View (tube, rainbow, N blue to C red):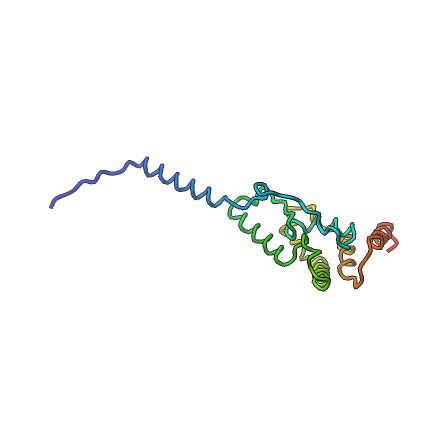
Length: 175
């Protein structure tokens, strides 16, 4: 029997190759769509709409990251596999309702979205608890929930003056 000897490749070459492959794989997995690298122009949320300013401020603070084009991506939104989940959640949120396109919706669609907003906020489904856990500024007070619910479930357009007077009355303890 003839034995052939192989010329073993040094272990250091295998290790260097493994490091190179791992580096390329890491670079590819961390490449996500970043709002910082794209041309980002913040659009006024619900601009030129009949949404009262106090309600608009609440929706902007608590809803815009997932339901508008004004998403402010947190630092951890670029770390795999978390980035995949966050980008998926935002994509689903925008697909359901994009507040940046509020004026493009028909009056019937806006009525339906107002009802969905009111129900989701009243039942504490929105903003989602996992979002509020990381973004405490999105937490809604009971007064804010009532204010948004009153706007969302109204059958008629509420003027900013009506909501402001309701807000002042509630804050003053007369409601």
